[in-house]
Amino acid sequence: MKRILTGITPSGYPHLGNYIGAIKPSLDLLDEKCESFLFIADLHAVIKVSDPNKLEELSTAIAMAWLASGLDPNTTSFYRQSDVPEITELAWLLSCITEKGLLNRAHAYKAAVDQNNESGKKEMDEGISLGLFSYPLLMASDILTPNATHVPVGKDQQQHLEITRDIAEKFNSRYGKFFNVPEAVIQNEKTVLGTDGRKMSKSYNNIIPLLSNEKELRKSVMKIVTNSQEPGEKKEWKDNTLFAIYSSFASVEKQENMKNLFEDGIGWGDAKQKVFEDLNQMLLPIREKFMELSNNKKFIEEILKSGAEKVRLQTVPALKEVKKLVGISRL
Ligand code: ADP
Ligand code: TRP
Image (cartoon, rainbow, N blue to C red; front, side, top):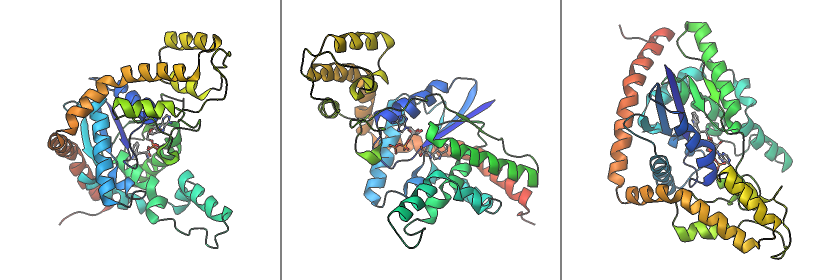
């Protein structure tokens, strides 16, 4: 049976890119023939979020994003990483068999070192936490603790999956086959652009929020960059940020219609209004559910707690077995 697992780090407010690139494809992948594990990677977020109140708020926002987008906690184990201590325990055991060089090559660490070198820092590791360095190791443990087989992620996470596979194979060859060697499932190669035309990312402050009221949503759509062309002038839809964002969620038919409006010289204000209306329509059911959940945080807490209990039915015995394999057992 397929065991599908994925996590989202609560280091920013959930945005349209997260929904199109990660949440929706993950939920679409689930069916009654698989077991599924979806979690909030709050321990990963400590690397980036230093304000404790913010971290709590963001963890709740990510939980609401999943639930409002249709995650069914009755059929999926939905939990917080920090509620499953076997993950961090396994991470240590895995660190003992993982060569440091494997993590030296990880993109996020390399990017941080490059930045230090570029800015002329004397020490290449200055300001880089051990948490950031060993992030891929904890991620491997997230995946291996419930012994997942398939991991839906964005393309940017592919390297982390390769590292996970290396670690699983190393463990299996040393102690005998125990872990599945998981596969990345990359369904959406397309990157959703942000309001400034770069990749939509919480790091760039260019997001269209997934959970917002109509007014905020409209405001963020109106921020999308355009050019100085006047209404009546024919507009190019190729390489246009507004059209690119529209095409990430609108049907082919609607996109064709928008292309025609561009050809006919629709004004940017009117085009944005149309993008807003269609996006608003798509997000309406998510917003309704989100509003309902916002008033019921206790309910979310209960879901997460029982999700952790459910996944621990697997992770507690798994850890026991792993410890036995490495030679840590009780007399
Ligand atoms: P961010 O770039 O805002 O920090 P994360 O790295 O936390 O987002 O991404 C969480 C998930 O959402 C990942 O699976 C990632 O691939 C996906 N994702 C994030 N931004 C985008 C985007 N602009 N387009 C498509 N998928 C995205
Ligand atoms: N690293 C992922 C991201 O930034 C989040 C994540 C943490 C994850 N642990 C995971 C994704 C395990 C899949 C499986 O998007």
